[in-house]
Every structure is written in structure tokens, then in C-alpha cells.
Amino acid sequence: LRPLFKSCASEQPQIGLVVFETLTPDPGQANLAFRWGASRLPGGFAAVSGWDALVFATHPSNPLSQISLTDLKEIYMGTRLEWPAGGPAGEIRPWAYPAEEDIQQIFVEAAGESFAAGASSLAPDPAAMLEAVSGDPNAIGFLPRRWLNEQVKELRIEGLEANRLRQPILVLSQSEPAGAEKSWLLCLQENLTE
Image 1 (tube, rainbow, N blue to C red):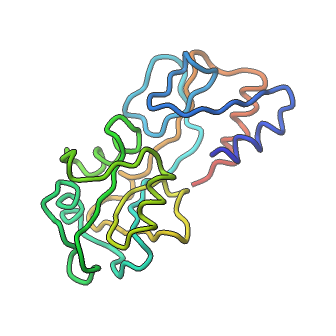
Image 2: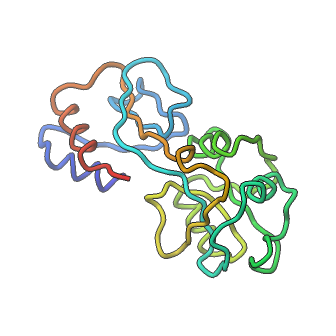
């Protein structure tokens, strides 16, 4: 979202923009904080600034275009070690995020399971996930849809409803933004499409 943040900030000459990432966005630490998903909200102002969907990704050379929800659960629980029929040869290498990350919480809630911590390698953020999956023909991981590019391919999950993967991008603040901050947020809402 950084390019969009900068673009909207350039339309508001009276606003300064400093972006920093943290595991648990706290509206008390900044004027505005962003969180993906609505499962854990602190008190104060919250508004939807846009939407994004969680997608599963694999290496472009993987011949599979979809797997079942059961297969996905078994992969992340560590009980399925090989790809389903038609997939690449070799052991599957699943990637996930630290438990406290919003994206990991969205995955766990969408799949409806608790996953074994040792069943996956951990990526600290979507950039690291993209790098890991794009560099390993046996890797599987998950990303916000807007991170998909030609380095990975989307792997559809049969039996997992798309609406469970679509989550709001929320803006949080101690109080309702006004003035330049409100104008900046309106610019984001107008331009933040899935």
C-alpha cells in the first residue's frame, strides 16, 4: 500500500507521512494505524479503507492449479508431506507467518483449524513469503492478493469459500480523523480497490 499512501499524501501538501510496520498496530502510537481483518480491534475509531483477499501461492512450475481444503489442512498440520497426485515430486515445504500477525490469524480463521507450529517455515512478512515461494518448486504459502505477481501462481483451494478469505483493511485511530487526515483517508478509499 506504500505507493498509494504516498500518492494520496502528495495530494495533501499539509500532511506529513511516516510509515512504520509493527506486529500489533496501536492507534496510540501514531495518528493512524492500519490492520487487515476485523477479528481483534482496540477501542476508538475504526473504518474500512478497502478490502483484500488472502490467496494461496505456489511456484509457477507447480502443475497443480487447485487442491482440496482437506489437503491444505493436512499440509499445514504436518500430516501430508507429499503433493497430491499431479503435483511436483518431493516433500512439500509450507510457509506461514508468526501467530500474532494479522495475515496468519486470517488464515487460521478461514481454514477453521489450529495448525501445528512446527509444520511450517516462518516468513516475517509478505515480501519474505513471496521470495520463499518463488524460489522453491515445492513451497506453498499465502499472501494478500495484491502481492501476487509473475514470480508465483495462485493455487485455488476447493471447498474454501472466497468470502472467508476476503477481509477489510481497517484504519484505526483514537478519534475520528478530520482535516488533512480525513482527506487523505478519503483518497485511499477512492483508490484502494481489490
